[in-house]
Image 1 (cartoon, helix red, strand yellow):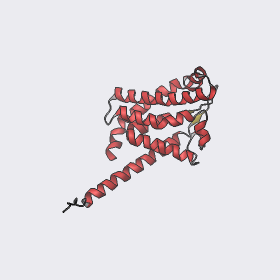
Image 2 (cartoon, rainbow, N blue to C red):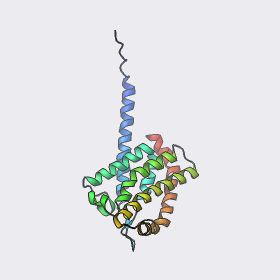
Image 3 (cartoon, rainbow, N blue to C red):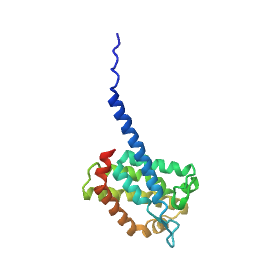
Length: 192
């Protein structure tokens, strides 16, 4: 006679459903956070890439939500933009944004969130948080400058217009993201 597994306790099912719902809400709110950060746009001279707060939000999302949820939030963000929601920089959307000069940065966002979350871990110290955010930012710039190089055919020019103008601002973003990971991350993760 085959044995049956006993039915799961209602309390365990409710706890699992509640945890799943919290994760879904966290991922959706994180995607919205990146969408809002994308609307802070400062055009820069001599580059088609504007200064935005998107990279800061990407690092925060990965560092606070962790690797899997962070990557999921950024994949959701890209999907929102692909279906026409105005979530990319300056209210942009659509496949043209992913194929254009800023597309490499956008496509690198889920990987950057994944890497930041994985390297940061659940309880990072200052050095670990800074390292995780720095590597996440490198991932963003590798994706961005690689696409610029592919579009323009010149890796040196891609580096000059896709990385150099952002160095100082991105160092500040790394520090801010690490601070959020350390100060708000533990409390936010405890609720998830």
